[in-house]
Length: 446
Image (cartoon, rainbow, N blue to C red; front, side):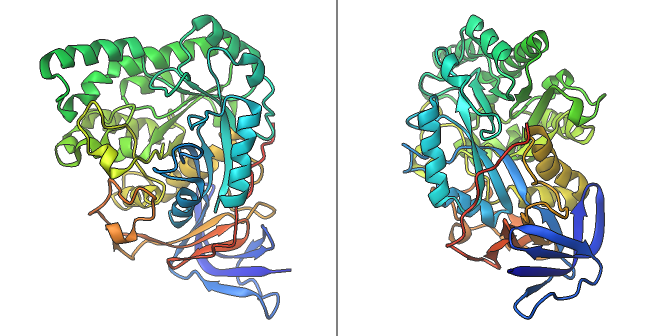
């Protein structure tokens, strides 16, 4: 039986930070205690003294671009970057080429991940206006969720038929995850700016075009429909302070039928950053005002918002450096998301324990992921060891994304991820990878 013993780390778990040892045997956490004896001569011992041991981050929204868009990214490259960033499990979106809108196409992605993913993985099934029968075949114990684009879709994935939408909400017991932006409002705003600027629309108008109103109209409609039908709804990447009033902190997370996520970029950047970062920080929904950013932080800390995620969505630098109309929305984040949030803990914006709740515990609870997201005996040993006092400058030389750029390039983070464990295996160790290790398909207790 292979074993790893992490000694004297500050373990951050379930609202506490305690200095203990963690024994890993095979894939699982075998023991958590003070002064655990080394079980055998071949046990690998890692000195965690002065470092902090976190559960592996679970990112509930990524776009790894495979199949069909692998000039931007692929499952191998981005999951490798994720492992370096302390993300041990991810849930990937269906808008690839082809789109994951049939069970057969969905399983093809699982086969790719089984061969190539460095970290644990699941995928969402994509709903459209005309695939309800196929959608209802989705196995809730093997697939993370149903994804519906209620705005900003690719291909035919915009679900804009209200009759079909209600049928989907009424017919499935699975969690439904939604992108909420009202396309009619966005088109009206875009047309107005085109009349003034043509194709040379200033990037600073992105949050005016993809406006607070567009987000609120769509989010409120989705929530109203979920309440009407009893559907289990999860709202992705909330970007405005106004939307946070749609969610509650009056009941425990486990009892919520409607949950919500905020992304790292909406917590880090605001519209004053467009001047320097330009289209590199063009996302959908748009990064908005400093007041919106403050409102998102407030709702995150008081538990109206439940998860911190990335919406990692890489494009090539050449694609991103086009003018406003042609530059695609999205950017790479999985390697640096935890570092950015650790910076927020250093700046007293959020406690380390609360950050772990939002990035580890809550994704596991909301998606009902089997034995992950916590440091507990009998759970999979998905773990991240971080040094909060070792700084690093993000440069092109240490960026691991296939697209080779980051919106954090030039940023100095005060923390470093030193070790990442996937299912008990040390996959990332002081900058070096074990390229033989592969992640597992996530399973769900539903």
